[in-house]
Image 1 (tube, one colour):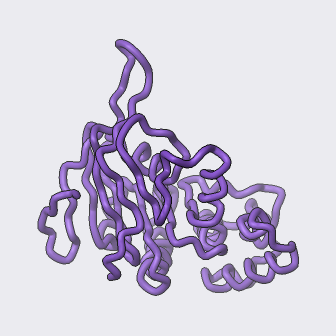
Image 2 (cartoon, rainbow, N blue to C red; image 1 turned 180 degrees about the vertical axis):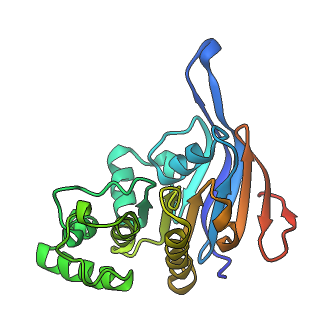
Length: 239
């Protein structure tokens, strides 16, 4: 694994609400993520996993601390700059797929390329290549409702990586899938990290897939309790 740091979270805090309703979702959280690794963020519901994922992705503002993703300090980017940064550098895979129901498989997969300004013809060609790689080469013209849950998730994966983002962020990517399909999805995500040298971050409750992680980040009550390297299973301090 490349030890180049792609994400550096330092002393980040985030609260929601005010007064008696104030919730400390993140409390001085620090974490580094490396190129070419698959990191899983785990812990009970409400512990801050999705909040951490969201501030790393730049879809949620944080109150204090710093987050550096690639060469950008997120707190220094305005809304338009954050949108542009995400479009070129981050791929998103969601629990419920978020495919557009009126678009075909290839049209859904091509969306990030079209956002980047590529012609529909070029975007569709690249999307077809990516769909072939995730095992959907015979489903180009299918609508989401004509696909199984596992196939829809693979379309979502194709959409997330078609523009070759260095960072892929996944929120519960296997929770809506059966075990066999979930394993296939994780095989693809692991391949993306190892073969294409990308940073893949997965938030999950699914204990069945923990073995795919290079490191497991355990959270509770807005803090990181420990970071375990899967090959040694020994705790490592966060930076």
